[in-house]
Image (cartoon, rainbow, N blue to C red):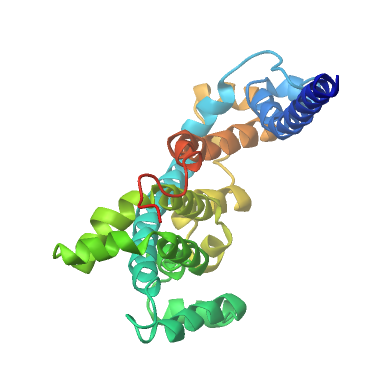
Length: 295
């Protein structure tokens, strides 16, 4: 009787957990669905407040308008360029810094000093004005490198990867050294393959950080043509006037209002990050170390 009651209680508790988590997931999904519905609805329906969770008077005019905006596409290209350069540089620097700092003090004597230097930067920041002066003196204003170099060494990611490297069994490294492997071989053949979950997490953090960053574009870019996508969306750059529109653009203009256009821009801007998640998600489900030596 006791085991039966325990089993029933466990099932009720499990069903309750699934129900609560499903409602939480739905509450996070509803805003996205509502924005999607607005972007697919006519301007008149949106202005009248008729759009809730489903499109009203289905139309793709908002997306046609977005992909017809040269300024938006230019900003999208700047963000893609920033992602390629920024993520590549950041991942390289993170790995190259985390590996030596993961060694013991007996192997790397200055390890503790360097670790405290990096920790110090997380506690005390130079501030906006000194950072801007450094970027300006280096001649990076209005350059893509002004958006990339200041974020080249994310200390939080370095600490994450450093601790992950230190958790790997030392027997593997010692065995590789006995076989004649150098540090570069140990890093590329042993540490990095075993660190795919940690690298995927850091890669995701870095991609999201660069893609969502907008304030540095305002600070370091004087020309709106150099704005990344998120800066473009925040600054709300106005498209050309009605008097400059072609008849086709005029027809599309009356099918799209400010809300539908913004909704379409937001969804298109979120699409690249949404495409990255499925490829990295499987690494979060794996164990910390697969196939490693057991003590």
